Length: 55
Image (cartoon, rainbow, N blue to C red):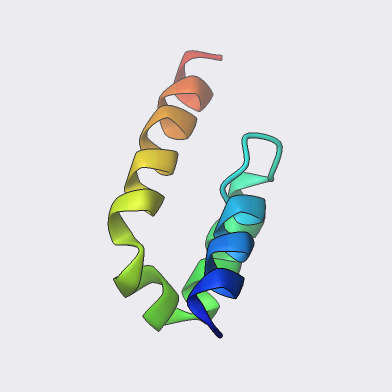
């Protein structure tokens, strides 16, 4: 992946409308993607998880 492609992929995966489980499954299939974008993913996960727990 080029960094542009990775960024587009993340934008799609980490959009609020994406199913969390689906996004996570996809991310874990590409460990290097997770390593390079760990902070972005965490920033996406935290509010997503907290909104899930409040529902």
